[in-house]
Image (tube, rainbow, N blue to C red; front, side, top):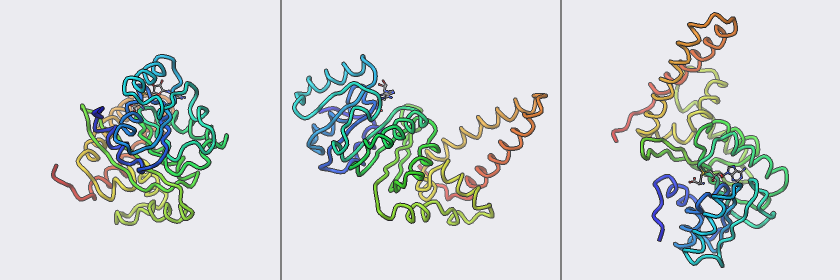
Length: 257
Ligand code: SAM
């Protein structure tokens, strides 16, 4: 049986048992092969845009003796799916913007019809993914953050729910932070940092945001040294953003690893 990385294991854990899964951008198809091996899913589709990873996914399925239950398809994003073919869609290991492009195109083409849950792990741009889920009324049921090999990953589990809008409204109400911030700043920071991750702050969350703050600090230094008129405005925006993040970090209960 395949042994997954902690990141992929988290994703696998979110997949609802018994669901037909489609893993988009599957590369070596580690995730769907594992889900089939442990019999968590009856069948799976691995989608891949590029020839090399597509062949690698086919080989992985064949080596594991799973060709009857794993279909490997080459194509762009959710194009590889027929509407109604999958209950769960997983997309992992790519940037949040690309992930949203894939979701948006799939949504427009009806490829997400019948899909009941999304398990998403953007490498960067988590904020845009949360924005997409909100826009399309997927309820963000849970999130996790994990550090592996010096990198920090966030995994989101979103589900279809008739009351998704009201549940998301409650989830993205940042008043639990008890900060004197404007509602729009609270909403933005929850989208950036993760509404569940902020309610249950883990050491990896602090580590990630200390690192992000250092990056923002360096950008601010460069902007401060610039003589361009728009740099001053940008500097002000970045500093305001950093102040909000700092306030949030200060107010969170710290946990010992
Ligand atoms: N999902 C695996 C994981 O998390 O370990 C593999 C991640 S790998 C870094 C990203 C994969 O997405 C690559 O194999 C790439 O070929 C594939 N990919 C990129 N754009 C894609 C698209 N539009 N549709 C399908 N696959 C895509």
